Length: 118
Image 1 (tube, rainbow, N blue to C red):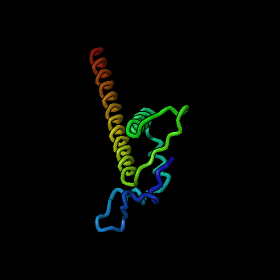
Image 2 (spheres, rainbow, N blue to C red):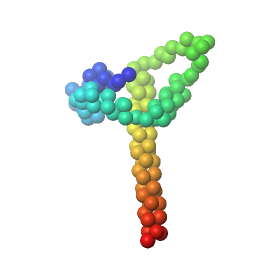
Image 3 (cartoon, rainbow, N blue to C red):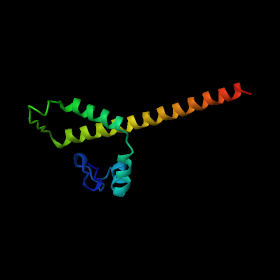
Image 4 (spheres, rainbow, N blue to C red):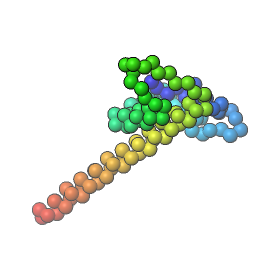
């Protein structure tokens, strides 16, 4: 599933209003290829955490014995989507930070061992 910014109308927001939502406007002007590439860059770990977070928010029943339907209004659904998006953004930033720390600590260890051999 790919986010379609053309169909995005969160809680009645529109880009024509007096208080233009700059992020929504930016998303609506992105080509679908860019949004697809961004969505594909998310790791499996992040997808799993977001999935667990959303399931925790709406509740989880085993699919074997239950036919679960969730009913909500547009405002609550928009809040859930915003929460998932923010969680994804935060987790991706933390994942990048972790990767950077691993690279830096790895380069520190390799430079220490290089200086020891001199």
